[in-house]
Image (cartoon, rainbow, N blue to C red; front, side, top):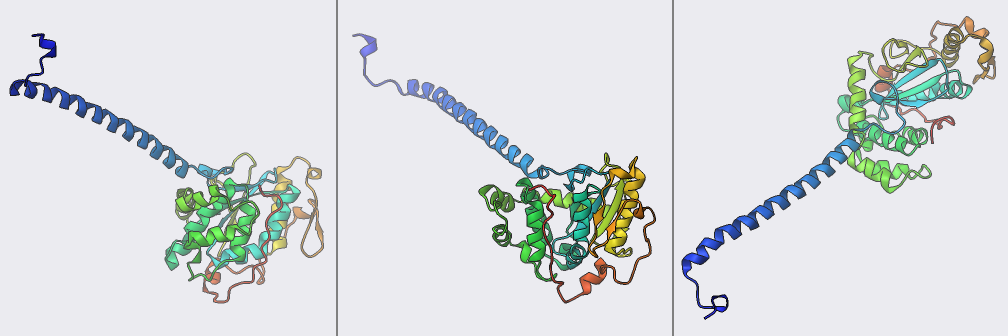
Length: 314
């Protein structure tokens, strides 16, 4: 009989000898498949982490922690702020228009740095979540518009409303073109929370006190914090006109010819020329903006008059 067609039962030992080899082949294939899948998952996770750790598009300065509004000037102003802090709202209502005028005229650049001090003093995560959402808005070139919306809808300091991602996404609907799948995913995933946390750590390490803080640096090519001079803080105050004069004086000193600097129309209707700014008033007045410390104690929420900067990236 042809052994190839022999279907008689095989000895038990023959089957036993074949089984381990087949099992090893099957197990080996399964292990390879597991490693392939694990590798794919790992690459996806790494790519997602890199996206999360990356700063928002368009940031600048030390570790890309600042949001710029470029005036293409020799003077750079840095604003440290907290979207949950009523003192930040008071600062914006007092100095926001002046800063926008300085940027629009080309006299100064303004950088914004987000911090989370109120989360520490009041508890919660509204400062962090709002800062993250601002980073997501910056990705969409809507930072200035969304910042204005957040300040105009700032809750009471003890109310952690900004901790709600859904609330932040609802507020984003007030900015044309911001409420997209990409923005919502960025907010939900907290893609720029590390960016806000890093900014807060550096601010705390600098011992600048409570926000808001405004620093000035006269070097258009260097937006790092080293060498910056604090000109507004909880212990230093200026009127908007004094702030404007001081910035213009610095701009004149850093500019070869004062004719390169435009005149700026101020809120009281006067026009400050670069020549007049050479002798700025430096004495603070009692009418200057409330300090961050005083603002935190103020139980009455300031009236918001925030408007987005026309020069910001949209």
